[in-house]
Each structure stands twice: as C-alpha cells, then as structure tokens.
Length: 126
Image (cartoon, rainbow, N blue to C red; front, side):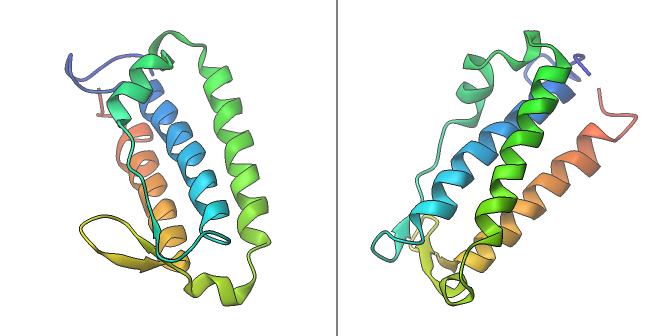
C-alpha cells in the first residue's frame, strides 16, 4: 500500500488519503450549496499539497481507512437529508460550467469509484 509506482505518483495509501481530502471538500460543498446564493462557485484545492501536508504516506493504514469511513458516513448522512427540490440547485464548477447538486453527487461517487477500482484494488498498480 505504501509503494509508489513512480517517485512523483501517489501510493495506494496516498490515493486513499486523497479520497479523504475529497470527502472533506465535498462535505463543505454539499452543505453550502443548500443555502448559499446560486450558483455556488466551487472552489478547487491543491490536491498534491493536501496529500503531502497531511503525510498520508507515513500514517498507519488503519488510521486512513477509519478517516475514510467516518467522512463517507457523514456524506451519506448529508445526502440522505437533502430535500429532493434542492437536487436541482446549481453550482459553478469552473469555466462557467453550471452543474446541479445531483450531478455533483454523481461526480463525487464516480471519482471515488475510479480511484478505488482502477488504482487501490488493482494488483498491478505500484
């Protein structure tokens, strides 16, 4: 889990940490989009710096797994309580691309599935 395929590529632990960072950022988005003025402008974040500064590479795997589980349980709670009418609220994801809350939720899941299925679970990654 700690082996990097290349010096400038994340290990599987760092990818899982990146998914934790994604969850942190998306919790903020899923909450704010429900009450902020529309379209909510989605702020990007420096993914490499977040992974580096949180030092996922040197942290115990079980600690990262527990964080991932806790954050995604929180996301499930938030998403379970979004009223249906708010799923059509709009956000600006950059370059004036307007997307709905429903799209943002599906994109979050797609992003997580990509990293888990195509990197973390792949035997030939790293």
